[in-house]
Amino acid sequence: MSSGRFDLEGRTALVTGAARGLGRAIALALAEAGADVALGLRDRFRDEGLADEVRALGRRVLPLQMDVARLDEVDTAIVTTVDQLGSLDLLVNNAGGGVGDIPAEAVSVADFDYTVDVNLKGTFFTCRAAFTPMRERGFGRIVNLSSQAALIALPGESVYCLAKAAVSHLTRCLAIEWGQYGIAVNAVAPTFIRTPGTEPALSDPEF
Image 1 (cartoon, helix red, strand yellow):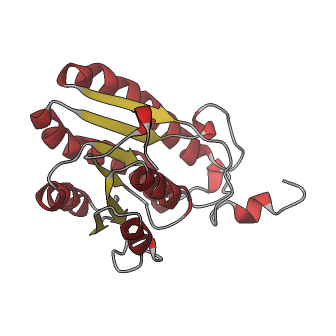
Image 2: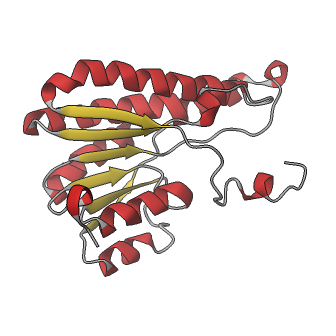
C-alpha cells in the first residue's frame, strides 16, 4: 500500500533486468507504492509471472524486449514506455552482470566487452534515452545500481569492479548535468543480496 513520501500514484517507472532477483523485487515494490511499471526484459515473453503479479496489485504493466547490450532495444523500450503508459517518471537501471571469477590476466576481450556493455554502456545509454522524455516533462528520477564492487577490490572481478566504479562516477556526472532539468540521478551500491545469481556463493560455507 502506498503512503506518504513513497506514494507513487500516477507515476510510471521502468526497471531494467526486471525478470528476477533484485529487479523483480524493485518492480513489485514500485507497483505496491502505486506506480505503473514497464519491465525491461532480455526476453519479454519470459517474465516468470511478474507481469501478472503487477496486474494483481491493480497497476498497469508493460513487458518490454530490452537487452541493455542492444542499444536499438534500449531506445525502442523508452519510446514504447512513453507511448503506451503516457510518461516515464522513474528509471531503475538494475540490469547487469559479469562472467564469473576470472583473474585479470585471463580476461578475454569478449569477457571485458560483455561486462562493460551490460553494466556501464547499457546504463549510460538507457539514461541518455530516458533524458529526452524526462526533460520534456521537467521531472525525472533515475536510480543506477552500482555495487560494493565499486568501492572495494574483489579478486577475480577486476572488470566488474571497474564497470561498477564507472557507474558510480557516471551517476555523479549526470546528477550535476541534469539537475537543472528537474532530473535527479542517484546510485545505490548493494553488497551481496540473496538472489538466484548470488545463491551459489552465499550457500558456500567458505564464502
